[in-house]
Image (cartoon, rainbow, N blue to C red; front, side):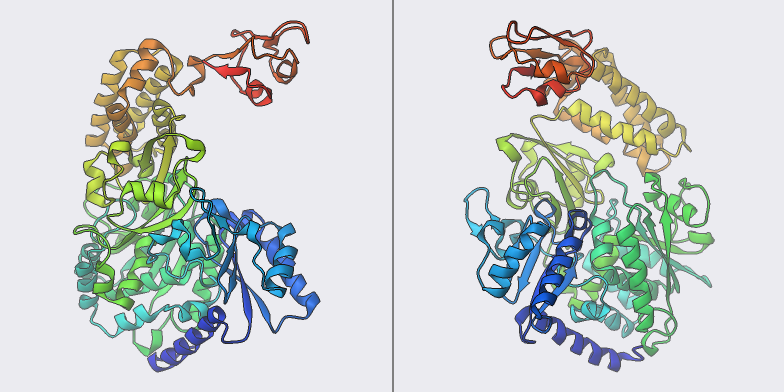
Length: 621
C-alpha cells in the first residue's frame, strides 16, 4: 500500500530504475521479451516462452537471462515476436522449433539468426531493430503508451513507465482546472463521434448530484476492429488511471468498465489491474491520502453491437435490454441509474494520463488544428502489414496504407479503404493524400469511427462489400425504431437482388431514398449511419452496380450468381482430379481421353475445382 504522494514518488523512482535496467543491461542480465497479445498467444507465444524457460533452467542461466511477457508489438501479421535486450534484436514469425536456434546462436553465441529478422519487402534489407522497421517509423504511441514494452500484469512496470504520474498531477489541481486542461488539449472522443472530451466532462461537472459515474465503453464491435481490446490487454492500468482522473474531474466516486465477453484476455488483465491498483492504494478509498475515493467495477457485454451506443450500454449495465434511449436528456445529465454519467471509450481514457503527465504542449504538437493528438487504427484487409497502428492526426491515407501498411499484397491494385466500420464509408485512390482527422473524413463521405481501417484491392466487389456491412447492421439492429428495423431490411433485400442478378435501375434510387430516411429518422447512430457504406460505394463505384444490374456480371468475379466456372479445354490435362473433388458431381469427362467440362446447372461455385487444379485450367467468367 502506497500511503501518500511522497511514498509514490519513491516507489515510482525505484520502478523506473528497475525497468530501465531491463533494457540497458545495467542489472547484468539479458532479457527475452515475448509478445503477449491475443494474436501471438493464438500463434503459441506461451509455448515459445516455456521452451526458453526450460533452456535457461537446463543451462543454469537464471541469474543471467530472463524471460518477459509484454503487450502487443503491433505488427500482428509478423508475429509471434521475440525481442532481445540490451542489444534490441527483433525476431518475427518465430515458432517453438526456432527457439533452440535463437538460444544457441544469439543468447549463448551473440550471433543474430538472420533468417528470422524482418526483411523489407521493397528493398530486401534485413532489419534487426524494431524502431528501424518502416511499420514503426511514422507511429507515435500515446494511447498505446507502454504497450509492447511493459508486462501488462505488473503494476511495478507500469509505474516504471510513467503510470499514475498523471493522476498525481491531477490530484494537485482543482477539478475544474483538470477539465480546462482537457478542453485546452482539444482531445476528442475516440469512440467514433469525436465529441470534445472536456466539454462532456464539463456538462457532468456542472450537475448537482449526490452520485456521479464514469463509464468506460469497451464494447468494441466493428468487424476487424481490435484497438480497445489491445489497450485493455497491453496496459490496462493506463485506462484505469484515465478513468480515475475523469472521476476526480467531475466528482464521481464510481466507475464501470463495460467490456464484451469475447475479450477474455482483456477482461482477465483488467480485473487483475484493478486488484493491483487497489492493493497499491491507487484505487479505492482516500487515494494517496488525497481525500478522493474512487471504485471501479467490470461488467461484461454479450456482444450486441448496438451496446456500443452509450445509452444502450447504460441500459445493459443496469440489467435492462440494450436499446438506445431518446436524447435529451444526455447521460451527462441523466445517465446510469438516472445520475450524471460520462461515457468515454477505452482509447480516450488511455490518452488522458499522457496529457496530465506530459503536459499540454507535448500532446498538442501532434495532430491538426481541430483534431489534436494521435489515433489508433486496426489496419486490416488487403495490406501487407496487418496490425495495430497509432499515428498523429493529419497522417495521410497513403502513409497509413503504403508506408506503414507496406502496400497491397501480390502486386494488386489498391481499390478502396473502408474507415469507420459499418458506420463509415469507402474512400478511393483519389483520397490517398488526404490527411486523416475527424472532420476531413466526414467531408469526404466516410468517418473516423472507432478506428477500423479495412483495405480493399481490385478483387473486391464493392456491391458485395455494401451487402456485407448491411447484413451486419440488420443482425445488430435492436429493432426499437422503425427506420432502422425496417429500412435496413429493405436495403439488404435490394442489395441481395442486385448481387443475385435480378436488380433493376430503380433499385438504385430506392437505396438512396431509404438511406436518406434512415439517416434523418433513426433513433441512434447505428441506424443513422447504416446507409453510409451503400451511399459511398454508389458514389464512387456506381459503374459496378450498373454492371450487376444491366450486364448481369460482377466485374470482380465475387458474386456467385453472376459468374461461371469454366475449364479451358486447351489447358486441361484430362487428369480428372477436379471431377473427383467436385462435391456435387458437376464436372464430367474421361480421364486421359477428353477435356473435362462443368455443368453450369449443377455447379455451386464452391471453388474446390480451382484450388485443386494444378495447371491453371479452370477460371471464373
